[in-house]
Amino acid sequence: MELKIQTPVYNHALTTILPLLEVNNVKRKPFIEANTENVDLLHLQHDCIIPVFSKDNERTISHQEFIDATKHAINLAFGNNLELHPEIRVSHTIKGRAPSAMHKKAIELLEHEKTIYYERMAFAIEVPGFTRDIGGNELTLTVGGVRAYNHQNLFNKKSLEHFKFFIGFKNMVCCNMCVSSDGFVEDLRASHPEELMLHILEVMRNYNAELHLQKMNQLIQLTLSEKQFAQVLGKCRLHQYLPRDQKRLIPLLQFNDSQINHIARDYFQDESFARNKQGDIDLWRMYNLFTGANKNSYIDLFLQRGVNAFELASGIGQALTDKSSPYVWFVE
Image (cartoon, rainbow, N blue to C red; front, side, top):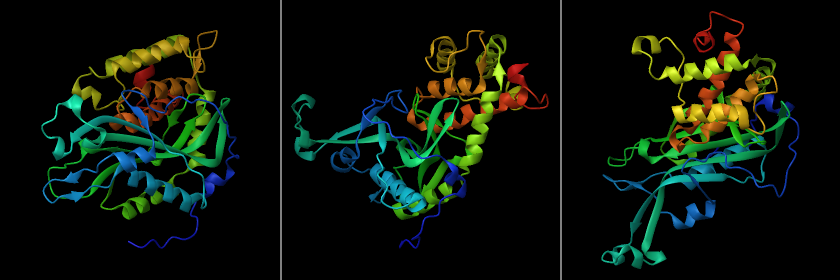
């Protein structure tokens, strides 16, 4: 497909964001941890094989092509020749070997006889020039995605391939991702890289960054007492055990028990988002405790839980003033 777009198509709401303040020589935390490891783009390009659809041997869109399509879309949306540095995290390594090494023991394999690719990959790219301060935290506009081959049927003929894509903000204090529903597509489908790039560009065009920032800024104005915060966490623990009929009436919660325990600990111990001396915590800090716990999610659940954290924090804020809100169950 020949690309027809030649001029930037950025969202006008992004133009009000302040210039990015670059911080050099600072070792950052990864945006996702769990069982992931950091790799660079050259490793994906030169050291990894590309899976195929087994019935027709047609290749899949590779991880590096997904990243390249996103970089291309960013340059179309925000201006050409931006210096973009993707942070790439991978998990679930799939190993193989060349036919010439068929009868060798694993410890005898030479590097050129090994094959490798990653079942799951997540990446994030900070967009230079777009930042905002919320609650004393610098937030940087960030674009990225997730590819999980376990969500793709590779045992069939080639079909539309599945990707997850987001545009949102990264909290530079902790490198937590701030993602809202209008900046996230859970199942973006494409058959080739050019089509994928155009879909990514459309999501970026429709994202309202200023509204997202406004909603996050409102979280600072709303505060939970220690008793209310304990109530919220207690209800989060109960949520998964609710009878099915009752659970259908309550908003979705995707965080598990170990993550709720992580949040409870950081309520007391987190350097940036712990309670104040009176035991109170505003919803911005609570939201960041949830996004911090989300770093322990597997790659294929990471973005959904990130959106869920924002919906929960916003919903609880609504429930504090509107008793008809479905999120009242979490605080009453």
